[in-house]
Image 1: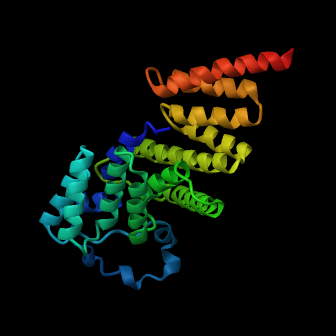
Image 2: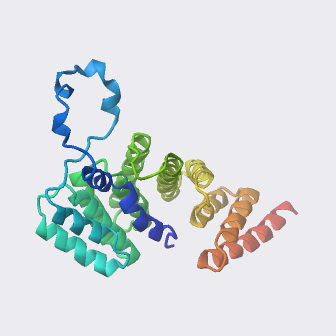
Length: 284
């Protein structure tokens, strides 16, 4: 089932990219080398700095920044892929490469090429293990396309869980960019947390750990505004697997409510009808 949040993920790259924030701010702020006292402070005097991700170095040139912004802001997936790959060729040592690979992952997600999503997402993470958007993308996609042997499936689910949990560890430490209002920034962090809990829910659902899946999906829908109907649908699947028919019906009804005019609405409505029939038979 294709996640309806793909377009939102793509649009969020420019907002959540630490590189983008650093690049936007670098044209307005002086060189950081002008802070002479930073190296003389002992670690014990500034523990709060240890909880924040390290600031990215400035881009090498205005041309690099312009090419980066053109690539990540391109809505058409094919053009985004072309521009992103050109950037990687033109700037092979760029400090923005992790975020360009993240943009490539979202472009391939729009094209339903899930192998390329994982490939580019993990290239991004190999350059920057704390790239939150890449953690979100890969954590969500890996449990959707398992296949292979039991060992391969287990490894994919373990990687997805690791990425999702690491993303949740990082969300609260994200630095607010100067061009985003505090309330909007908090909403975006909450959205990230919802996506990461959704990824954990699917990991547990694929493992057959239905109780854990229910807990993760309940968190995911409680954080999202509006909630993702796919999360409600999978919450319904988790309840149905444990024969919790009332809870499953309620979740599928919510999935249908938030997905009018889509395939999810049709599938959820069918599940509600089937489960009501089953429940009525079981209660006789």
